[in-house]
Length: 141
Image (tube, rainbow, N blue to C red; front, side, top):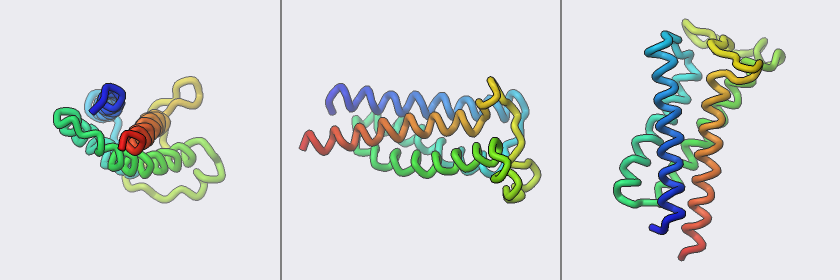
């Protein structure tokens, strides 16, 4: 594996690590109970961290296909979640999400940074890096 791929894999690992720690901080330290959509985002982010940990140790850049799939699905969920928080026409038709409403905003920095927004940024960074890695792998063959 060349240095560009290794650094890209490390970037994906670092991004997923920070996102994982952030979600655990909000729920375990700050005491914010995750809603149903937050759980789906976690279900997709946590494995990215675990997979890239193993892939980095094994120097396996082919994990980029898997991280691309997980991050695209997670990004779509995050985008929808952010939309039901910020767009009135979506929030009115938002599904009931169990005990904690998905429209709730535990944080709202600068009027637009919420927890789903942070997850969306992480998923986008991982997806872009994953697609870059896939392209680099194809060109190297």
